[in-house]
Image 1: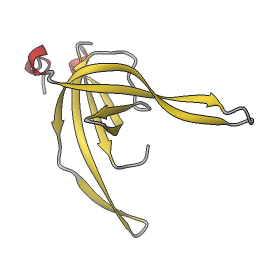
Image 2 (image 1 turned 180 degrees about the horizontal axis):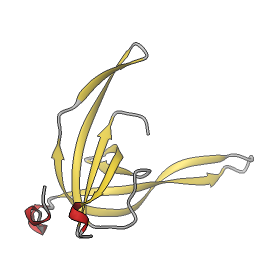
Image 3 (image 1 turned 120 degrees about the vertical axis):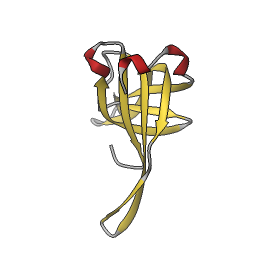
Image 4 (image 1 turned 45 degrees about the horizontal axis):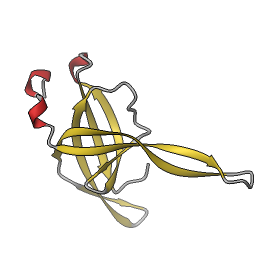
Length: 112
């Protein structure tokens, strides 16, 4: 996809951007929770899923690409909620390096 192929009218879906938040549990340890830090309008493309055998178990995953307006605070440790399901971000790409659009490649059904 080129930068000129994307325009505001294509952003028809809403996604939530979430980040891990560590909180003290009061017993010397910590709890991890996901906190929504932003919502964004997105153009979402579903890619073919895949199945992999891991440890004698068949694991299925779904790959999705979302294009959003550029944000400097998104990285691969975050996740996206799309249609109520959590997707781990696998890569974040600044489209053509122009700080206008971000491509988020995400996967559901796999460990963080």
